[in-house]
Length: 570
Image 1 (tube, rainbow, N blue to C red):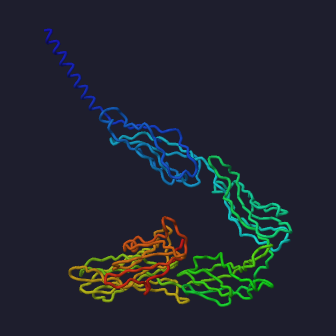
Image 2 (image 1 turned 30 degrees about the vertical axis):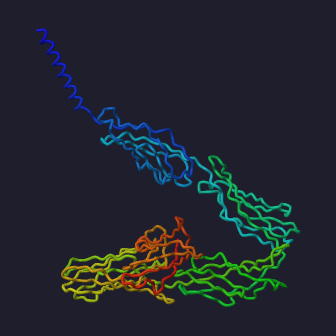
Image 3 (image 1 turned 60 degrees about the vertical axis):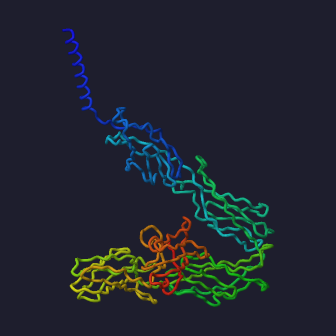
């Protein structure tokens, strides 16, 4: 009886243990992961892009249970919590490293919401990471005026209003700061009133009556934003020169304003400047003209004036508009003892009248289809009203050469550079020429062209057996492009088909090569984006050269030439 009792107790305990284990297995749930966030993150204004490790720490899947301890925890950012006024991008790794790019010149306090989720589907509570962007004073800036030429040694007090321009304490948030100027680097004994610049940029000074020659003065703008947190309250120093002459200045009589047509090529105007003189009793001196401060984008070769007064310039392809041109005559009489070797600046205007360029589009390869096929669609690309003529309205129409095989296709202009052409094959096989006509509303005044046509073939057959299209014997090289990120004409590339080999180079006006490739796809698909070694190049004209062959062995050329120019517009 005693033995049976002990066995009963043993078996009972075993059953209870198994029942508890079963109940535990049935009641087990996936607990949410856990993590901790630190005290607020503090960085400086203009922090840039950096990663901060362990911003999120003690990342835990939620339980020490074997089934859950091996889970992977993912950290996530609530995108709606990112303030675009502070950050242009934010990222958080699963190990807790927070990376972000601070918007330039932004400061203040903000927060980012984060949460964790494990691969068992459990999500943690959302927590905030507080970030403080401490303000850092940006340096003030200004644009100095020209070097100064005093009319005579005893000219008295000098006043140059708005000599310093574009005076700024820094970004918009620093507009409440005040700016003053510090001038140094000169000998104060040369002046009865030393040079000074007021808050409006007016430069004043009075040389001693005996002072002559050239005096260097260094100007620095200073704001009251302080230097806390590494701030800068001084601008870069800019040096200008005060010249007190004795040499008589050269003189001349300028010619009239000039008007030419767009794409009119090199221009020359004989004796534009007249009565050119180095000064009284200074006939032995040599005269030169300095031409400056004009819109360089209007010209391939900027305005120049030779010593005889002849004016020359070459407008840039497809450029039009007006620009003032500043001119000074200089002599070699020097500035010793207060000499004056520059004339008073004068201006004239060059106007390049617009001439409408023809609209254009990419070439269309031969299309192949079956008799009685369903409606076919051809995508047209590269459509443009002409260089720098995006404001014009385009009209596109299409016609077929054989209406038995193909009725006139229908074109739908999609805007920008794209359109679709739809056609329905007829009941007869054969080749049909399709002509696409483009017309803009720029008119034909001054020799403008407002229409162009492009022809391609549609081959209709019982069974479609596409053949490689014949290579185009003429390439299309654009004359202008604008890499401004609007996805329209952003790169400079060659258009055409059947190119077997190619060497393509681009040069700036100094002769420096800024682009080169011998890869056909690089120049026909990727193109040139207006940079050189990662540096954005300025707007203006650039020269290109090409060398290579089409698949039929003929040499590459554009309008019969292997060189040309392109206008980069920004």
